[in-house]
Length: 212
Image 1 (cartoon, one colour):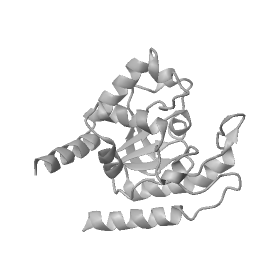
Image 2 (tube, rainbow, N blue to C red; image 1 turned 180 degrees about the horizontal axis):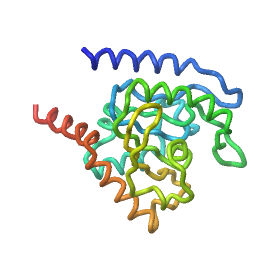
Image 3 (cartoon, rainbow, N blue to C red; image 1 turned 45 degrees about the vertical axis):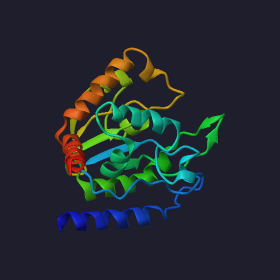
């Protein structure tokens, strides 16, 4: 009964989120994941130009790489989308700037932070996986990716004690995760994730389902 109430609340949250039009320069639609009442929260940066048409985060090339990473620890894309809650620093496509996806400005990040705060309150996640510098920076202070990738952090965020395991952004434009020390640190981060009790519960749930 408690899980059902939580799922209903998350569904209502996403319905309200998709109505948001607070940022004039952002290009709708709002991109949101499945209404999963999960104890694992993944935070991306902002959707790219393709995600809006597909109606889900990480729907294009960066997503292919991200789900390959999850596959190495025993979770396929469907399992990840159905069992992990997908959030982001900003939920609409920021548009292009000088040939690249524009980085959201401080006001846009502030505007969208209300949704992330609401998700922390609703889900009270045990594990948060921020993906990319912008997402990691909302939770941790750091200078270089080498300072945080491959490590686990326990923080208090909005009255919720949670573990943080950052990942680099899986963008094809980035070479960090394809060269050392990025490759080694990424592998270490994935191993920390798979050993975490919150992710273990998701993997075990999938194993039980497959045996039925």
